Image (tube, rainbow, N blue to C red; front, top):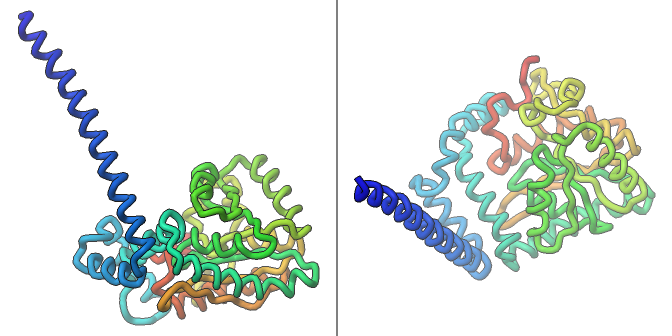
Length: 318
């Protein structure tokens, strides 16, 4: 009996020790792989890395966790645009991760130069508005990468920005510290309504005085905001691709609050990162212009948009 108890105790502690050892080995292996991956992204040609990753996606080696999104994304693409072809949601997700890692952890010089060029173009579009003492709101679409789009906006004069996100602000603040010195803060719409109101009041005051830029993604789908306290009143009813749709009204309300001009833009990939910038839109015209901007981007750059896999898109019936 005593021997049996001794064996049981020995087995339990041995198992714990082995488990702890395996955890350490796994952690060190993961860290080594991450370091190697960052080294590859920093010193190798990113286009070559993307080409190899595209092939591995085709062979189902990469992007397996996203492959179930492909049928939904493709059907959404067909139904809305009427165009043929397929949307490879798994490749869009893998490319996003590679480009984000290249620009942040790996600090790839070529990718950073491409982002800097995008920032310069956006800054040139915003400069005339600044000279006229207009408040400005930057409105990137979810294309290529929301992280990279926010980095581009953060670099625009005065070089400081806050981005409104639909997830935990704390989670994104931790990520912001890894963005290579970009002066970017985050504000979550899932905060308590009083905290959100306080954060937005301070932010809008800075925006009105030109002390920082406000970045908000206007193409966020309702299923990301349905659990927020403002969900019931946060819809902008419109027609999108000839159908009755519901967009989030945040950008229209914030623009009116400070009489801001809104600059819509989105990133796309064509032999490198590039930017498409729309003409500035006055606050009173934002609600009318927003559906046109989204339609144009989805029709002209469908393989760069990140949200095709959303089942409901903008057509939730409530």
